[in-house]
Image 1 (cartoon, rainbow, N blue to C red):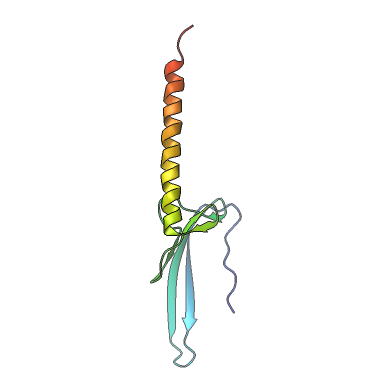
Image 2 (image 1 turned 90 degrees about the vertical axis):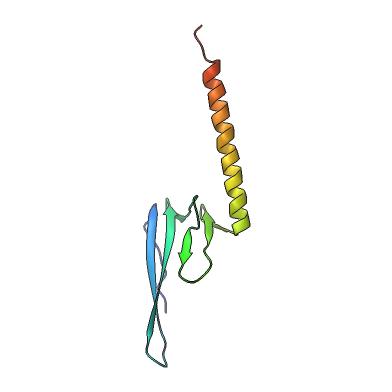
Length: 100
């Protein structure tokens, strides 16, 4: 029986987990390591996969929601566009301000 894996409420950072599997027939143990990136208590990573699984495909997560690689790429494109628009609006706001 596996114990549920959890982190502190509001945790931000990288957590490393190890899973130990025992082959009942041979008694040999296998240790799998994986990393999970958290932001404010939920699985989240903006700059790559949020769950890195040893020998398995990685998982992309944003604000606690798992995305496919294609959905993640779309998220990054929208984020870049939003940041570009915000920076343009901020520049224009600064340029329009002047002495009265």
